[in-house]
Image (tube, rainbow, N blue to C red):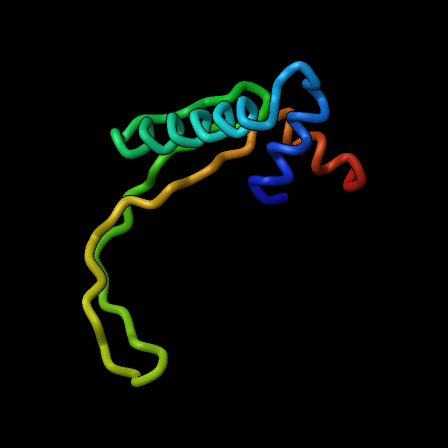
Length: 95
């Protein structure tokens, strides 16, 4: 699913909202998650999962085209941990 499909689905389920309002809500939602994560925070959506960041240490990498070694700086990367309810719904067939 892409962003425009999400906006469309929310609009279909909430006919009282016009498409611009739905787009604004989705934009604010993603902006707030991004802002919180950039402040080294955590965003927890009960039943869905939790967004956080994890530290990746500096390392030596390799350019796949040339084979030349390159230094890769330490950085923070986004991480998502699915909630119990989501895991249960995804694994219904596995039981």
